[in-house]
Length: 249
Length: 134
Length: 135
Image (cartoon, rainbow over all chains, first blue to last red; front, top):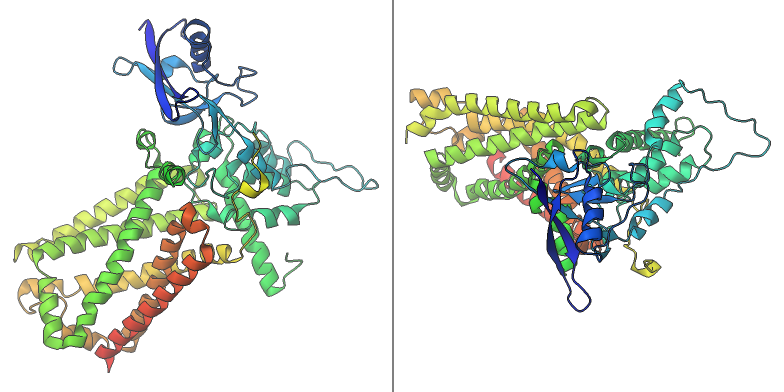
């Protein structure tokens, strides 16, 4: 196959509301050609007005997240060849879901980041006179937290989540994953606030364990596992409070 | 109104793209929802049918005789299938909540489907005389 | 393009303790229902199958069969518990599904009250029907 059809869901031009499918025949330059390469080629050779985001191009920044053939992926890490065969020579690219579309493949991540702020995503500082925490690389705590610190906030999980939406209050997988990483961190002093933030109809209890977030995460973070572990922690805290065990929250 | 509806359908996974590819977790959720809603509707119908006893024992027996004809026996088998799947997937969800088998959630889903299918094949086999007697 | 604060979706996290209890009780009721529904399906739909096929009994379920079963304390307990739990489990699930729809999610209180009233009314009606067999 020497070329393929790149179909991009684009917004109408000024004065023409709605969206349409823009199709372009793109040559397959090499076996390692990525979808981002195809978008860049299209903008350089066919239509300079095609709008999309990219930055590092090596899967580290999460900027180029889009929906490719119905599945959330990073455009720079998705090879064109892996989606084409003799029976399918078209690649469909759409903007991420659940975020307002600014233009073409460019979305407004404000909702996504706003939900992140609701879980206090920064580590709360220790008191100045506290000794530094010692967390060895092979400690149980480190092994528990490390996978969940890999998040690059690409928004793919938020797009894939059936419970998320621009007109819904659900925190979303990324925010809850971040909350989990900090709750598990013994250095952090805001566990109570974070558990309160994820405890509610728009928090962990709204997760239906569909596992779409885990499936699309480019860093293979076990997001659903984090949500389930937070649920178990909250259940324990609630029953401790009911039965006055320990220091129930 | 259009935007929320569009978001609703996209979020509920009914958009065309979501139907492509194998997404066990999503299918499990969809089937759980469909069987659940079906069972809620059946529940009200069932209470309605049983309430015909208020019209007398003979009326109750007449209604039940109709509901035990082959057509309704087949519907009963479909009901049992829905209950079985809903219950088994419910157990799967609880296991996942407890952190058991979370890395094997796809296999657990297939196990639910397999168990439901095998059980209902056996139940249908034993119910054949009931269907045939009509 | 920054979303104005008053346009942000309402019902932020941490609002209602009911969400936990709805989640928790849905699982508890589901687990109990596995056994209750199993018993009910067996007794109501599949036991006596051999008798019917052999011709010793006209129908699987009839007034006399149900009345005879509901003279036993165990089955009275099973049927009333089943009615209560299946109504709770089913309507709680329906509530969850409804509240995923944004227009309904903006009226949580009304949806909750409406479904609760439906559940209570149905339980009262169903209990009366069961009592017609028992008394």
